[in-house]
Image 1: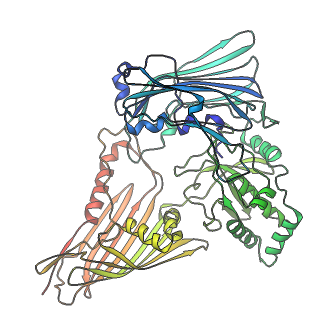
Image 2: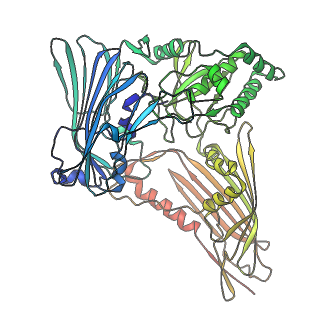
Image 3: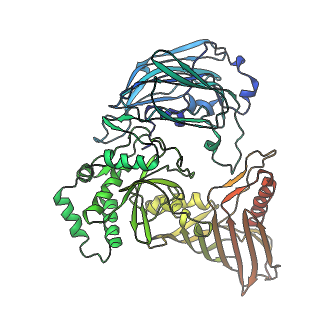
Length: 633
């Protein structure tokens, strides 16, 4: 549900620009080639708002691709629907010396549906061009014009599309009739704004150039927080024939409720009575909500809509009830309608979903923040959140797709900024116990019991839902141990207040310990070996840990009777501001016991501590891979 319309290219793929006709790669400054897989040669976007129902966006763009890693930035999707029309579309491909190799016409673009198997979104389409040219470097240019019948969503400007793509020149111009009132949010822009005026119109132009590609540094903050961004919201707008205005999030929420959600709770009386009957024996409103959420999961499915196409307005609840599918907006509105049928209020919440936690511009209300909709039920002292697109997540559980971030809740009092639940370090827990036996030939067999909580819960949903054959394949990849066999696999999903997935395995690993004469070389920490991280000299970005977690492994390995039990017990503890590691190993009662606990703490840490961070990971990895030489009598 990303509200970007045709302009989604500004954050999905590069929108480039042509202001030159010499694409000789030799003309690109060497500083822009360093670390870059592609360079935006000249990106020029002009948005002319002639009236609220006539917005013309003209884009000229060019990008030079250096290798196959840059090919993805040369593709161009242009989305359209009943609110927007593509008036012209063409392009060309040039070789390394800037010599024309091929002209691109409108007929060369594939025209495909943006949504499969759906009559709801039959008007949502995309024209797509993917260059079939692989003689590097090459340059692709595009020119196109899109006319939109709404002005709520004015194309935004973000010239930096990726850390590994440099920018030679980029500009953004906004033209409107004199006296047009707009709110403008400019972020991280250090240049001047060129303002011009004639008898009828006035314009503002932003320019930037010579932005070098940046080295990717692991554990870095969200790069979008440092990128240039310009957002424009007209005071008065029209959206799909609906007029409105808002100056803050409260007014935005009021407009969504009054204009977009109004009359969307249109369940038939028969459906309302069905939901009332389903919940008649429930002992509380929360139990009623659980029953209806279970009904939603079993009787509907999620239809994915390409970003920028779904718009803001949900389809009516009656359509979802009839068809059994919808996008996030439609399913959230359907659940809201079911709850309303049994007199349970809920809030339709717009959120920026993704593995990275991203919140709204708190002081700048706009329709481009947010790409997803979830539901909030404000039970007294027990606010409950629902992911309505999932057929599997437990009631009241949000995954790391929408956790710990601001949302705009559309309430009876207008828009309210709320915050979704946060899964803290200790609750993002993986808890494992293994009871194993070592044979004289070095093979190991036994049982594993592992529980996954919090943000680690959904990480194992794919194995839980896979077929038996696919479970074994996925587990082989996950455990990544040579010669491992899973004799029995059993998964149990616990959907209570603190939900978790329980994994029960019976395993056999042939020749796990290396036999050498009368000795066996064994690594007692079998299942959770930490990897090294990249070294980073001259670190520039702070260390940023998006989500903390805790992994605890307790392993018991019964040893052969004819084996010496004289190893030196091992104990290691590493404590740092960003994490803690504890490892113990000893032989007791003819068993080799190993205890391992690794905690990584969410937060931001100074860039100059990266060497310490790097050493912490290396020490953990080294200790995890420690081995013992066990001798036979």
